[in-house]
Amino acid sequence: MTDPARAHRIAIPPALEEARSLAVALDGADPLAGMRGRFTLPSGAGGRTLTYLAGQSLGAQPAGARAAVEAELDRWATLGVEGHFHQPGAWVEFDVPVREPTARLVGARPGEVSTLNTLTVNLHLLMASFYRPTGPRTRILIEAPTFPSDRYAVESQLRHHGLDPAQHLVVVRPAGADRSLDQHLLEAAIRAEGDRLAMVLLAGVNYATGQRLDIERHTRAAHDVGAVTVWDLAHAVGNVALALHDWGVDAAAWCTYKYLNAGPGAIGQLFVHERRTSDAELPRLEGWWGNDPASRFRMAETFEPSPGADAWQLSTLPVLSTAPLAASLELFEEAGLAALRTKSVALTGFLESLLDRFVPDAELLTPRRPDERGCQLSIRVPGARARRDALEARGVVTDFREPDIIRIAPVPLYNTFLDAWTAVDALAGTTG
Image: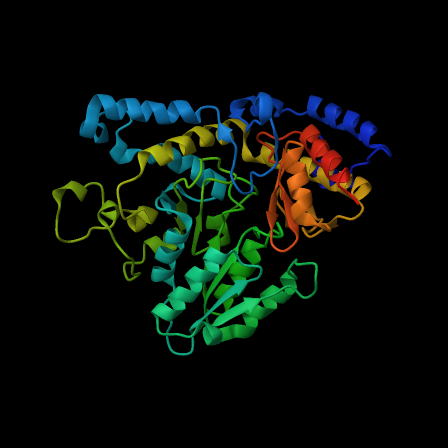
């Protein structure tokens, strides 16, 4: 396996066909090569397996996902409502097996993570708890480009408190056309807001550019001025190493259908730091499923919060949505995030090197330093939409984001160096 510290400087042969031989050799030396067979990859005409490089949008299906869902369908058919309580695998505690693997992925203690709802719902729940505008401290700071749902959620929370987003929303934008934020300027903007800043809500990895933000650094800056931090980790979880507890992050939320491969519209998850969950004065929007399991079925009129992050749960866990997540997390446990990250740096570095040599009209928008990105590379090319469509016609699945971005994500769990070569071969063939 290529040394990850040098993966962005892979020596590429002068001819594309020679580069293919290098890809095959790298795949032959890959200790994680067997993980690809643990996924059911999309197929095209004639059953041909597609070159699937869109895991940043929807992860591939774990081969165990179907059996995991069918097992719960069988349980439903056999036990009916008693499936909630019949052991092993009672539905009332169906999220328990995913708690510790999730905590390891995000660098948390088990009680700090919970499985519930969907991403934007969870962001609203967290903002209901942590966005408490008081006196001059009213502003929320975000970065651009911002995923639209995050911005809509933030603006609606401001309006909910009777505040005008035009006055109370601070947007830090890239300086120039490269679309990558200067993190020094981002930190400076946080500190400049001072006692006007109530909350910082940023993406751990930006959806459009693939840039990885320094979570620890910007969390510290927010805390230094008295603000709280909420992080959207949709593109970070299962992609880059995280240490949310040690970094002192107040709260975070993410979906599980991208790098966690739990399926379209799958269940979301969140993190709340234990210093926050132990604060009896912290408000929450509450529901029955957030009640302490020890007293939940007493049907009491008084809410008794579950320990830890589970207190933010509202409704019964959707079992059929959670089953594929459990199947996927088993693969993360088997492979190990450190080994996956090593492969990811090498694989994305290989793709970057191929693009530099063989697609001269591609402008890389993602930072070139491996520690400032995950596996996604975003490129700007002339005629981006048409060229993305041409890639798809050749069996290479990427995606397009307005106005001119093609996103390519070689995911280390199931993508190969040959996949990266195939994408560049197809993209080079569309060069005018």
